Length: 461
Image 1 (cartoon, rainbow, N blue to C red):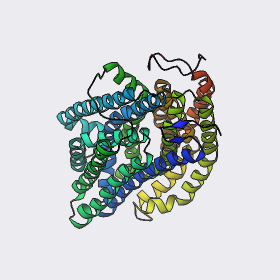
Image 2: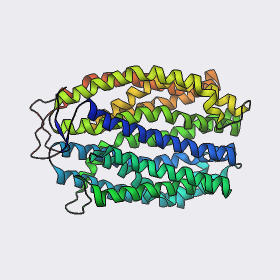
Image 3: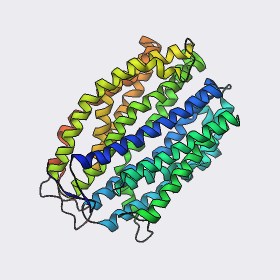
Image 4: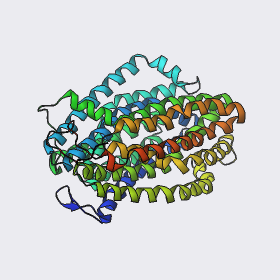
């Protein structure tokens, strides 16, 4: 395989690919694991109504996460691009402006939500049974806004700085803290929904402290600076990360729609079933997302370095992965659905039966969602986040919401679970078409918007 000097120490080879992909997958899976653990503690020790409350207010968490991810994914891709081009100062400026703008935007959003709290809870669909728990959990998350945002930024930028293992450790430390505090606060101290929220936020605090330690002591290229930060550079990071922001915003809207539709068919049991399915689907999505994010800095670096043949090789490995993995993962989902749901709901209960059946139908979307996710992240790595946003908008909102509203009219609650597979299949066709148009050999060109010195290649789109 062709190689290129990478981050001053490594060469891109199959071994170096694994060094990035494995920690990224583990990071994503571990985030998934401790999120699921939260749900298990809450459902077992507080009840499925409390689990439904967490799911009900999670759209606000999605938006906060989206604010972080729009700069974490977009900014870190730009930073990796600059590092590949030897523009280390520009890379650090991309990092710094991402931190400043994301924290500012997150703070403004949190204040607005607190001011309009009763209206927000009504909009989210909080029923009288779960309204109090919804308010408690939401207030804790809003108070933790700075660490919610900083944790995502540190995880992505540390990986872009050439330290994927430390990036995993950042997520791992917070996850372990969260799990331990879940046991202490929920099981031992019986703090209920308060304990669940505090455990999560304090876990994020730990991740932030580990991230700060990295940039103080162990950084390779990136550092925080306030010198010569430009709003235009922040806008470029913002635009390049639109895919993830659109995804989180769309998830926020469709989660509300899922909850309303499930409630109309099965009341609080329906909302609880949706909550369980959302938790379990994180595992599969985490694998897809982890692989794509592990490849992303390698692709961005190689693209910035002008090594088109390296990008093509990385894409070949990715096509193989997203051809083989989906069938295996759906088979695992179908077989293990009863076992997975049993962690959240008692066997034989209404919630249990709804969630097992729903997971098996909903999981059909996994056959196509992996390639859709990879296509969006691939374009973000190449600085084409606006086109990545189109794919994400299609799968997360434009195709999903009509399916969610129309299919239940024909198939009842089965239509709710079918909406995701339908949206993913239609998006898959669009992803294939966009991939054929935006081949890396066509994307490779001189880009004066990045740097006057940066000349990637002589080809134009």
